[in-house]
Image (cartoon, rainbow, N blue to C red; front, top):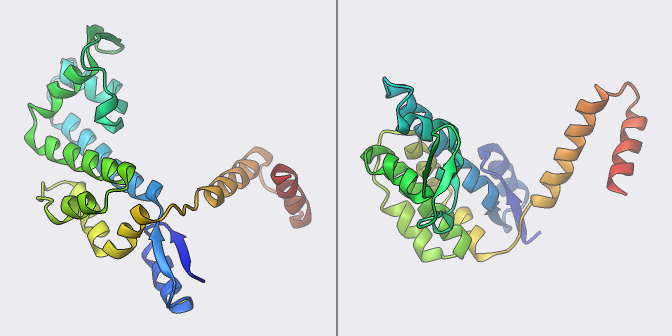
Length: 202
């Protein structure tokens, strides 16, 4: 066994090291983005709760257009105005995002950390990823824990930008099996369950 792709579950990493001591451990890129994305989402919700006026533009942008904050900053519309539902205004996506990050420095730190990690993975830039993790400044948000987790598993995280391996296909199969269980409300007969799994995989 040369390589094993896993998520950030500490128990998985622990027993893989025991079973395959010579294998390189690779953290799946999806799970890295999911970790920092969840931290960004928590920071966004925390910021919303601190706002007294739930009818102001900032609150509406945070609530109705949360996807803007998870979008690659290079893909944001900076010149063309678009209609923002919920806000009921026409403005460029970049302006809407700037309205939040420029007025809330602590949230800006979290947002910048997310974008830096996301783009380092996208570009498969090892040096940039190291720089982001090593020079991150704590903000008192959940992003602190996320970055600490990535630094703790630095070698496996850096392997994710050096190798193209992914456990995406396995995750996809698991998702389809879970959807099958939900749609059928369970199976009494395990053999029938296996047959249905074989059918969706055929």
